[in-house]
Length: 305
Image 1 (cartoon, helix red, strand yellow):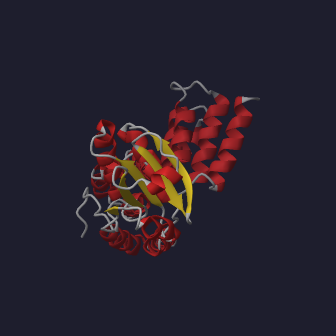
Image 2 (image 1 turned 45 degrees about the vertical axis):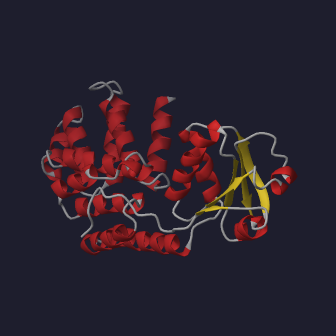
């Protein structure tokens, strides 16, 4: 089993090296054909370099081999610094496919350094392992859709053993346990999500699904609620509860229809609860899901009618 909440281990070592004018062509130009290379021109006497250097090293290490860093002391190596018109230090250049593609001068805050390194690392595209894990995630999602939630959960666990910060797999594991009816287990897994993925769209969607499942656990049977609504179409609370129960039973489209009916009759009922619930369902589903697309279109028509 995975250790929930654990941090992933970097996938690659030796991604940070000291470069020279003699090795520049090999370490930077040639190497950038395989993976983007960031070059940090610095000097021992440079104060800002002492701040920027550790920040870049940390960000490159976190990238797990998708980008490399070559550090060049300009006092000892002036040839390429001159060719690249390095006029002040620190100066940073990024190379990809043998050419400079980006760069900056001066010490940046760690947040901006992280953004820069992430942008450069993204140029490498997914590696074979990431593509393999993405395929495994897709297969596990199909298992949930086919009603094989137990097998899906096992697959998501195996993925997370390889990459403990895989947001898609983590969210999938939550959904798999929801499909199995293991509400408490699903909530425990969600609450143990690593900090670095806690605010990702995948986990946000899983949270919405978890909240909807908790609501559904406190409603009555669908048939009983439907009978109440048929007996009194103005009973908005019973219709709302029916929508919650329908979504919990996997009938998201029917749930949306009931909530739209409440909104059509009284959009301000219970402080706009129908609209709020609609958006929670939309958040829980994939953005391109027909239920979401049709539901948003119908809601817009009612709002602007």
